[in-house]
Structure formats: structure tokens, C-alpha cells
Length: 251
Image 1 (tube, rainbow, N blue to C red):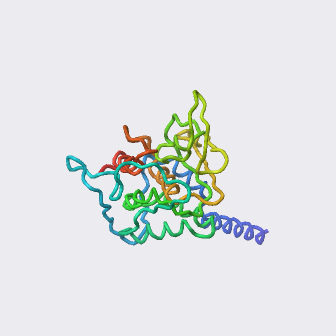
Image 2 (cartoon, rainbow, N blue to C red):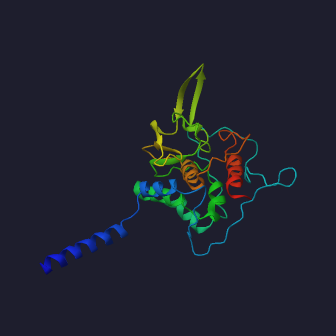
Image 3 (cartoon, helix red, strand yellow):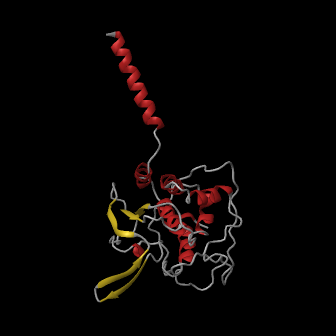
């Protein structure tokens, strides 16, 4: 009897250790983020990396231009075959490593980086914003996004604030005809577990562009409906994101 009791205790201890050391899945991270208030994640993601300034030319009145250093008038998204990449000079080792690992040959490893970015320390966010138009192909084939816009209907990814132009489409009366899109199949959208947003999922079997992955990860990081007013994210993407950053975190 004593031996049986000892074996039971050993089995329970082993189970507890296994649960404690089991790697987190994307679903686990998402469920945790859903319960957090706006932007309330502070993770030490590096050994004391200083925050690196991102150059932003001044607008009239001295305010920093939220469009970034190399962006003039808004331009339409790149067409097929073009591969513009955001300037990577001045990025911290942490951000450079994350960008490189998003291209890891194993999609599972790349997806883990996506979820790390959803909880990244605030000091790296400006660097990530500078890369949201990066068109290099990642290995991330699945995106899960917490959309905080209650008006989102779940049928056009371009209607997710901050994702930019994800489809080319035309509106004919009350109908929308999709010409092309940056993802496979249809969007899956449901109310998030606690009702505090819309759980939205996109797939692309050959991998999303890095910029698209970063936009989705940052939406999970910000988790806020304090969207900029008067800026069209499908036309002025980086300007929209700098304004969104200021709305959520301040200057």
C-alpha cells in the first residue's frame, strides 16, 4: 500500500513538472493577451538593450513625422514581383534576430517568433514599426489577431485597422468583388473568449510578408481601439502606425 502511494505521488509530481515545463503555444499566448488591458505587457527581451532612436523628419510645427525617414507622399502597395524592404540600419540585435527568425525554414519556429513579438518589450516597438512595409517573405503561415474594432465584420482583412491594404477589390452597389488578396481562402472570425474583441485568423501556405506579420503581431501587442482619426491605414500605413503608437503609449 505504501509503495502504491509513493508511486502515485511520483506520478503526480512528474505530471506537475511536465505541465510547468511544457512550451507555450500560440493559443496559450493569445488567451493570456485577451485578458490584459491595452498595451499592458512589459517583457525583458534582451540584456539591457538601449532604445534606439528612429529618425522621423519634423512636420510643420516641429512635430515628428510619423511616416518615417524614407516615406514621402503615400504610395499604393507594391505590385506583384516587387520586394521593397524597410531600412534595417540601426536596428537592435534583438529586432534583427527576430526578423531573421521569421524566415526560419521551420514554420513552427517562425510562428513562435510571431508570438514573441506579440509580447515584446515596448522599447523595441518603434523599430518594428519601421519594418511594417517589409515585403520579404516570412515562414509564418498562420496569423491570429485580436481585433478591437467592434465594427469589423470579418470578411475583408483591409477592414482590420492597421493591417493596410490586404485585398484589391471593387465595390458594386452593396456588393464587394475581391480581385486579389494577400492570404488564402476566407477569413475566420469569432468573438474572443472573454468578448473583448474579435478573434481573427488568416492563412497563407507560402508565408506572409514580414511586414504583414509585424502588423498582426503589433495589433496583438497594442490591443487597443484608440485608432488614429483622419488617417487611412490602407494609403498611409506607417503614418497611421506612428499615430496609433502615440495614442496608446504616448510620445
